[in-house]
Amino acid sequence: MITDAARQRLDALAKPQGSLGRLERLAIRLAETQGTLAPETRPRRLVVFAGDHGVVAEGVGLWPAEVTAAMMRLMLDGRSTCAALARASGTEFLLIDAGSKAPCFPPAPGYRDWRIAHGTANLARKPAMTVADFDAAWSVGTRAAEEAAADGIRVLAIGEMGIGNTTAAACLAALLTNAEPATMVGPGAGATPESLARKRAAVATALTRARAEPDPRHAIAGLCGYEIAAMAGCIAAAARLGLTMVLDGFITGAAALVARALEPDALRTAIAAHRGEEPGHAPVLAALGLEPFLDWQLRLGEGSGALLLLPLLDAAAAVLRDVATLAEVTGG
Ligand SMILES: O=C(O)c1ccc[n+]([C@@H]2O[C@H](COP(=O)([O-])O)[C@@H](O)[C@H]2O)c1
Ligand SMILES: Cc1cc2nc[nH]c2cc1C
Image 1 (tube, helix red, strand yellow):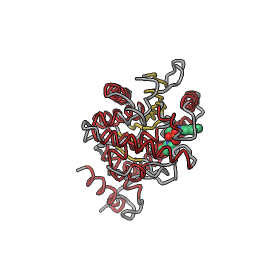
Image 2 (tube, protein in one colour; image 1 turned 90 degrees about the horizontal axis):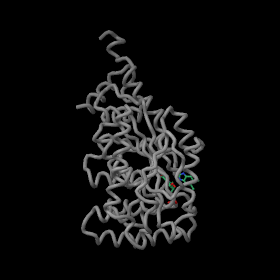
Image 3 (tube, protein in one colour; image 1 turned 180 degrees about the vertical axis):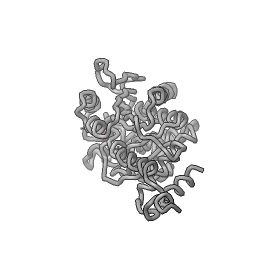
Image 4 (cartoon, helix red, strand yellow; image 1 turned 135 degrees about the horizontal axis):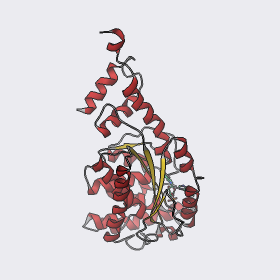
């Protein structure tokens, strides 16, 4: 099995066993995702899925929905954090609009306007989307993964942008881990005590409705976001296609829960980049059974945490590939 082979190779290298610490665990996980002791980390691509959220009308956060479009514009101009970090790590960048309220931007190589709708319904009042729209958004993600595979991408970093999406993610995380809703609610992109109280109330109301829904797809669709559904579809498809995927933060984690709920093998090639500051992220990762590799107090989103792991992924691959074994050195 590849896990044992990778462990044996790392133990045989010209270094004290285990001396590269957690880099060795990353090397093993990377080898597992590609089924080889010579994994590749390039070419690679960051896909950021965008969407807007009707629940913003409840006053659940600090920022207006217009910030989603403003950040998308900045991403396309190459001036957002994720655009800068993608350049710094030699990673292609693609922005996929699955359901934002943004204006139509001019066609650009790094931009796909694959919108299913222009924002979700307010999940505190009614289901966020229909199952048909959920399936359509899932297919947007499938298409993104298939395009990446066709382009020869080996590592797909996955992230999102969407004002209000920590509320949707908190709902999905509570539903799919069976947690108390309040444990999944945090400040997101910023909060006041009042906005936090409104967010807790919105999540509790939506959860009561979703938990009464006998069909899991209906329950999920009623809480979801277009970018979250698209990420879930992308994760499931990337697993099927054998693409190594690097997952970003709390919202991406919630999408991974959705993916696994609908396709049990969806995390076969997934690596969790980091454990972030949002309080629900750690329990989500625990439920996913994924070990986060960075603990850097991140809470940005945009795939930023996934991009930060990529140089370490290069390092892990280089160790597996380039370091001699002790037997080669000693001739034994
Ligand atoms: O990735 C994370 O863990 C993360 C944690 C907090 C906030 N965010 C980002 O902030 C936005 C959502 O925050 P909010 O408060 O509007 O729900 C969205 O664009 C996310 O990318 C992301
Ligand atoms: C400025 C800003 C940038 C972001 N990037 C991802 N989520 C975000 C939320 C805000 C508010």
